[in-house]
Length: 299
Image (cartoon, rainbow, N blue to C red; front, side, top):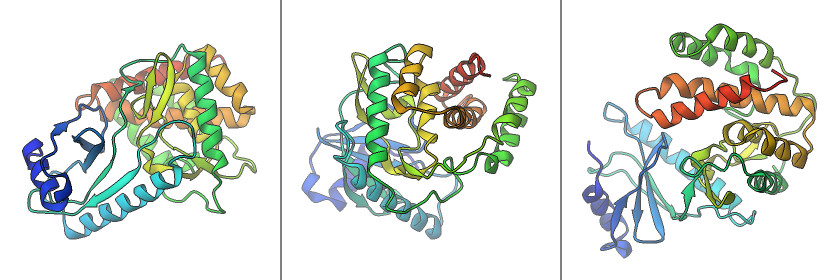
């Protein structure tokens, strides 16, 4: 099923007639989860990427619950930092034109860090310190990390990493990388409690201007996690000098810093092979991050 401006215009006018007649424009994005369209000047519609086969009702219901959870997370973060974040506006329902629920949120103008690399900016690193500190200050309310994604225990990703190594034999120095993971997977968590975390501080999720952070996207994962998880931004986004600024600003001890590196490693191992052909930009981010990790004197 093709999702184009005409289809989106039909969905919007049918479910939200107050927006009928607004211009609809597809947004160029290197994201991997949603196809995005602007609705007028101030809204954006996010449509989950369709599976190869027609989704079952149970799948649509699962996605609806996920979208609701993401809207709750976005609302929980909105206005809690000085950096702009999208606000949830509405949830669209499955229809003949598109068989899954979809969401509408406010549009944030700007340039993503994928297109305007701030990696050499110490001021950008200081902005990340401010962002991460403000997110942590929101407080978990006693909630803890749950689920199978990043943010819990590193060793819980062993099966995924075996898959990544198997698919990366012709792409990367797998023996060296496997040896590194053998050390990373056992890094101690200690008594560090979960903190509120964005959980995916990658270049495509941050808006920048003049080497400074201006906004944060894809905030639907905001929730409790290992405090080291948002430190993956040090390796996805920063060169050595600014990376030191981030570490000092957050007062990271050796254990927390090493786990942040391990989370970046785990994510990047999946990016290189999985998106080799379908999303070369994401694959390139994974390669660059792995190169930065391997160049670290501590490694």
